[in-house]
Image 1 (cartoon, rainbow, N blue to C red):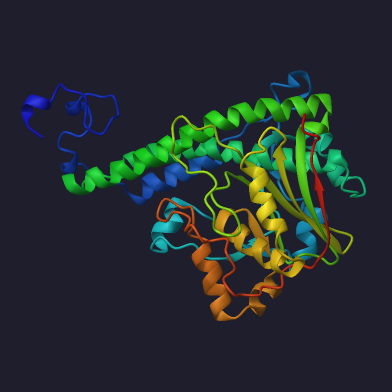
Image 2: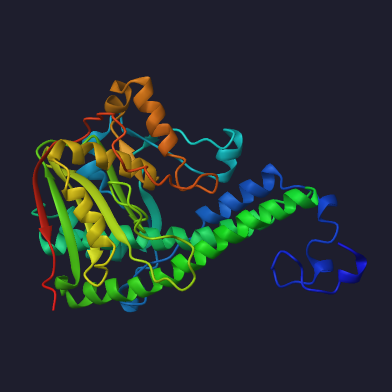
Length: 375
């Protein structure tokens, strides 16, 4: 980088002049633990009410740690001494553990929470899930999906700040490493922008369903369980591949509008259910994804769902005794899946294909596909 480039736009794409951005970058102080701790503190301080735009006059203004998975109805059923097994991903923690994620005990008061609803709306909107008998009604299934979606949008907005931090991670590094790190950060940032674009469209659709209570606009695939599941989850993804390893959607394409599927596993009355939900308009890829799962028998589906959860969601929580019952090979297999989809590792194309392990995490006794009539 010669001095004649000082006033030109920086090569990293920040939009700043080179002299205000990467000039003498290798001489700058690298990120410190204090920088990471400040970032983590800022992330934890974010508080919003996801439905304030819909019901502004009813918002209490008191943002709470809302559970995406019911604490009293689900987490308590699989907890032991008030704890479940899950991950606590953070940049500081990843650096401390050499970039590896691992399951650890987490108190159920902290498991699955996010500061995305005020106290009034969390209670009023999700009362049919928390205070009524679970019947798997269309309304209850939608509310499960809506809560999981709001968490995903909340964390995607946080990921924008992660991208900004990643762009600062090349401070004090040589120019070759700067280029590599900026490449990673740029790709991550672009992916976050695409996701936020799509999630903005989906939020409008989901809000419309919430207000109108027209549940014909969302589809569900329900697997009913005849015993309490050993793992619980609430998340949303863009299906990249199906359960036979076929490609569905290739991420990172600027002109592509992606389809998303929301998934939840809950327990109630010593049984439970695993539910996939997707907008009826997302029929091209989501339908194929679900069809590939329905090709499997119930025992195969049970193991496939464990592979799926640990490859695609950090908001997966497990019974400690179930986790301790697994062999070291099975634990290592899950440990490797925890890294899928992180900035360090993409999802392998065959990550949902049968790996030979039998996790015995849930027992399926019924399956139901609820889809809207296509016109």
